[in-house]
Amino acid sequence: MITTHCNEHDHGMTANAFMSISLNPPLVAISIARNARMLANIQQTGRFAVSILAEGMEDLAWHFAGKPKPYLCDFFERRDGLPVIADAAAIFVTELVEEILAGDHTIFLGRVREMSYDLSKKPLLFFRGKFGGLADPQPAPPTLENAGYEFIW
Ligand SMILES: Cc1cc2nc3c(=O)[nH]c(=O)nc-3n(C[C@H](O)[C@H](O)[C@H](O)COP(=O)(O)O)c2cc1C
Image 1 (cartoon, rainbow, N blue to C red):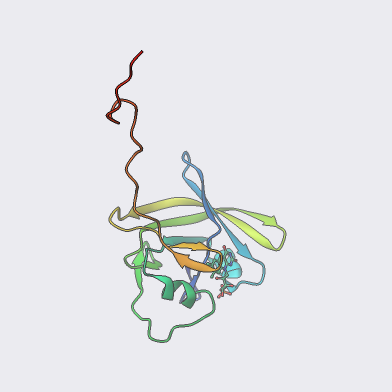
Image 2 (image 1 turned 90 degrees about the horizontal axis):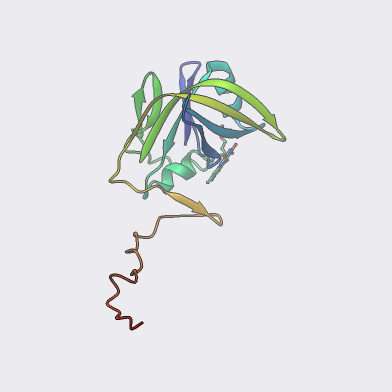
């Protein structure tokens, strides 16, 4: 989820085009469609935040993808003046450093000013038009040493 605060309004938009770019300096990238309202909002404010939604937050994802869920409320908290999703799995607060035109999208590079994460939460995934979650981690496969085999050479 991308968020910003523009003209005294909080604005959120569901996005999965997000990646980390650089550690030093700390940069992340998002890609925003030309026709999304978020594009002009970020250009105007020069700031955006990214909230990695946690499992169970599907309704919020649809809400900010143009399918409003009127029963949702109190989902924002504030970080450094920007709205972010309360109880997200991770949060990045950034300042816009570069804009790259890419077809019908614009890639925004943001320098991370603040980040936090909650290791108890798993991220919400999106695959083939549906939301889902990560499988529980599997134990490592047995190695020759711990598999209990005896080798005769
Ligand atoms: C799972 C999912 C991922 C999406 N990812 C992106 C994205 O990375 N970039 C983008 O521009 N739109 C993306 N969208 C579409 C926007 O969320 C949608 O067009 C939204 O209504 C635009 O909001 P706005 O015009 O109010 O800014 C995605 C939608 C969904 C459901």
